[in-house]
Image 1 (cartoon, rainbow, N blue to C red):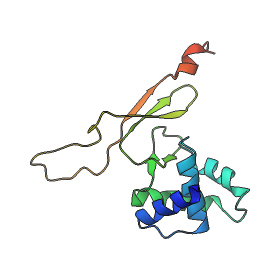
Image 2 (image 1 turned 30 degrees about the vertical axis):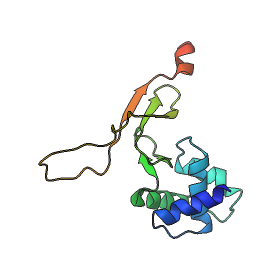
Image 3 (image 1 turned 135 degrees about the vertical axis):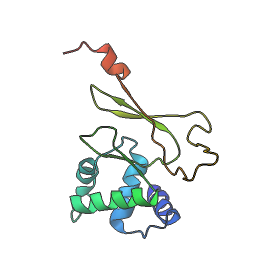
Length: 140
């Protein structure tokens, strides 16, 4: 059952579960599309009619603050969220706007800074270009 995975994820990150939080985490874990707040809201609103966009936004921010989700700002026009928190990169097609996960070589998500007086907690690797589908379409 997927809801169990969402519940376990929330508990693992010290987030108090609620019906809305479980549904939103479940959506992130089962839809690897890097959704926006609006996309999550539209998808879950039919299932949870009392859900508001503000609740979705606040919940996704909470997940990001606790490390249970990533907040992606690759495109300055929209913020997307990712339920996959292990180190990986993202590719964004500059024509269609789709985001895709890109595996990193082992250890590429970590950085040792000998003698530095700071600690790296987060790294973002973004690639931009054209996806295969957009490459094959004539430019308008």
